[in-house]
Image 1 (cartoon, rainbow, N blue to C red):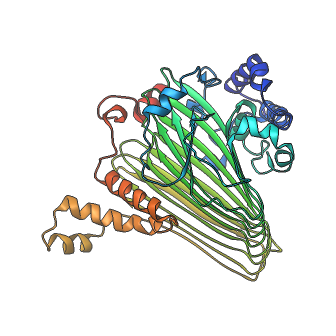
Image 2: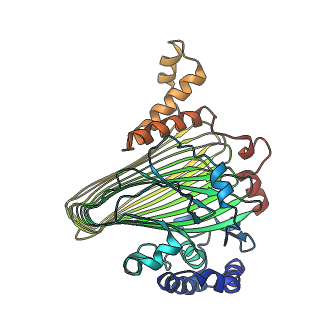
Amino acid sequence: MNISEQDIGFIKLFDSNRSFIEEHASPVVNAEREKAYAAFSAKGMPRPKTEAYKYTNLLPWFKAEHTQAFSLNGEWERVVESFQCNVNELDSYTIYTVNGRYCDSGKNGTLPDGIVVGSFAELSKEYPELMEKHYGSLADVESDGFVALNSMFAIDGVFVYVPKNKVLEKPLQIINILSGDRDLMINQRNLIVVEENAQARVLFCDHTASNMRFVVNSVTEGFVAESGMLDFYNLQNQHNGTVMLGGYYFDQESRSLLNANYFTLHTGITRNNIYARLNGAKAENHVSGLYVIDKNQHVDNFTFIDHAVADCESNELFKGVMDDASTGAFTGRIMVAPDAQRTNAYQSNNNLLLTNSAKINTRPQLEIYADDVKCSHGATVGQLDEEAMFYLRARGISKEEANILLMFAFAYQVIEKINVPALKDQIRELVEKRFRGELDKCDSCVVCGQIGVQQLQTESR
């Protein structure tokens, strides 16, 4: 495949900044960087006709001429001190990243003995054996050019290590902040390792703190060993000028449990790539998502649940509420390998369109090569129930309030999957505020003439 001028621009950008990028990285990270460089030089970024990116063309926003967030320029302390996350009443260990770089704010408290949380750049050098075993083994630079791009340019992110038999009692809240006085492209890399019989709850909160345009290419690899448990949450609440590409790759060993929950409450363009490989018998996987979008916003959730061995279970539920001229896409692929007998796999995607202009493309997919399985998938697209609306209006409830009640009832099934009571309460409140328009801020509103998807789309033509 001949790479494009756009791809060549990134290669030249990397070549001119190679020494800075590699200077403080570990040998393992730089070795993977070499593989990524070779893969990207051969294939470049996925083209618009690539099947996996059929409904979301990200190329217009990934441009080598964007300023790269290679350093923090000493501004992170001011950003962290002045920023308040929407999830602000959670008893948690709290850490921050600013433009993809870990920031030691001193707010995370004392972690339980043996549990390690900190800078990906620094800790990847301190734990070379963990890195050699895990880094790059899930997020394949050969299969996705955006993963290769991340592996080329990523400098920092978050490293989480929960050793055997350890329990992270409180949730770990990772607040990712985008901030700057110029448009930025950020490549962030995260690694989460939960060893045998260990447990962790991790919450990513993605936010913007300034009005510039941001293009984010983030990759997270998560490993859950035998009888381990990872409760993972991602809250995306970024302004309309943000293009967010998140890759989330998980590996599960025998009797492990993964709960992964994604909430997109505000965005410009978001693409979530969610991969989970059930690699040991009795592994259990639960993935859910809720996306609430309006104006010209776009959300694309692409999931791939790989049942590689027998006697595993997966449950997948994604729901979307789309208003105005927003667009969405969902591709859910379940793969059952020939030896994965006695698999239980269920998938559902339900969408609520509030206007005739809102659109959704949904593709549930089952690929089964075993005969002793229980698998199902389905998708629905509809509007608010007129009979339920009539019932509420007949009891004196205003049309606006009835709309909110019906939307919240639709979304509630996803919210109920949150296993942390305090977080569930906060997400419930944020979703209700979103339905009431209270999360829209003037500095991120298309209507007010600031940065927005519609403007980005016009300029990319």
